[in-house]
Length: 111
Image (tube, rainbow, N blue to C red):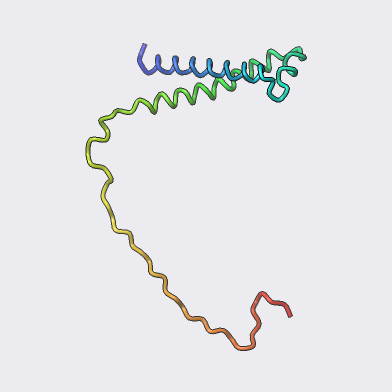
């Protein structure tokens, strides 16, 4: 089996394991009265299954993303970096004199 496929399967299993722990803690601590809702319903097991699967997908994706980001080689930072520096053209703002009319009312005032 290729190393990448094996790494994906391992990280998905870790993610679903973490999701199981998370859902178990939600039920154990009775967050939002969830244990009561699940235990007093005939379809409570389906709600727990859906909660576990949906959280498992999220946790597995995050776990695999972290694993991929940690695969970075340390050889990437050997050379000088920074790219080519280009001069930034700075704009000097010009002040424009505006004459205020005598006796004219401003546009925001009412008469």
